[in-house]
Length: 223
Image (tube, rainbow, N blue to C red):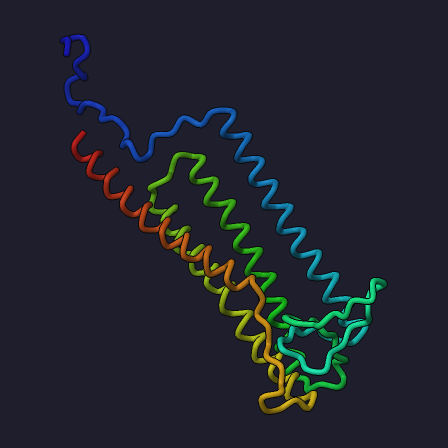
């Protein structure tokens, strides 16, 4: 280092910024971030609008929808080809709300509303994580906390609404008079498995980010 490059007396030399916080955001990065934020915003609006429309229609018409498995005695009309159709799998049925206990109706409606709110939270947190990654704060503590919270919310999506809907559907089944081995089972659908797979991916992401943060701190200390 030349004498001209030496810092003035009484001042300590400026240290380079830690590698984990360096980020040069290009116009392309900003455009990508704007696109992600807009897509997430549209997703939240679509989720809320679809839920409000469905909930309003069910409320006005006075019914709820339940998904059932293994329903005996259900027949379908023959198609024009004349081939017999044997119903299997899931049956989505509408039931008059005034013919059911109020608790069962409330559980089903609360489950639907809770699921919508949690999915909106998932989309919003994805936008926040994308913002941090775009700013170069990959291993920042705030990003790690966001990923932790995101994992919890994804787990809540997989567990919370399904538990309430399962309880409400079982109550509906009992109120309709089914009992014993001939009673159908509530259907949880494939959404719970999708959310479960997403939760496992988030756990793997947590491990990778924590390891990367430790490596970044060690590298900062060396330099």
